[in-house]
Image (tube, rainbow, N blue to C red; front, side, top):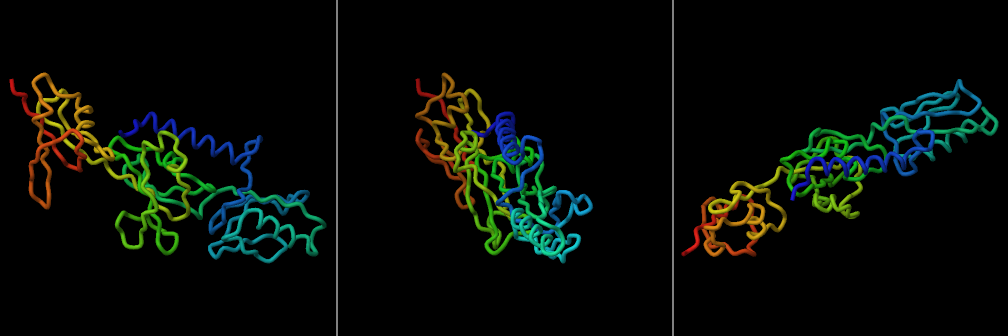
Length: 282
């Protein structure tokens, strides 16, 4: 069954809180991320201890280079913070400063992002603040809407990181995984997948089945994975005193034609199916 916004938002908040605490020291300043690879427009805070005139914020250029006082530009793109920090210290110590101590931290993540599309409150691009998981990214998109289905689809470009969001079935889009929202709610580690630059998280709109006739709460119900007739009847509050589980029909559209068939309690339903519960014989 679909998560409520309250439960899902709480889970997302916990995930983000954990991620944030893991990325900061006790003073609240972000620590260098040893896994994140820099890219164009990422902003860095660089401190050369004892040399305030060399310290400040610097931005990785469009060509991936990083300009810094005293030395020629270095290549920063596709390198980690520790790698850039080590090269700066080495270059500054080569004829300019004696045993320089250099600190490099990421001030703003810009170059890497994923896209969240579909039934979320704030669809669009989400900047990757270092390695991030599905739950963290969904949290930054305002969590799921009430119309969200029971699965989340993760798409990845088949050639390189995409600069535009992908859609299921699109040429060049590979379905990396399909994750159950229920599994995310349970905290299943395998469901909370790590994401990378260019990925698209797509949240489809829920598909419905319909339970009509002599049930206590007739109407549409969200199609869960593996939803059976018995489960659908349970969601609809069961049959009324006049209804009979032995007199049920499923109406299904097959190749554009409406087909009626006898329903059994263990039948698995498809999108758009209608269950009609008839009256019992007296």
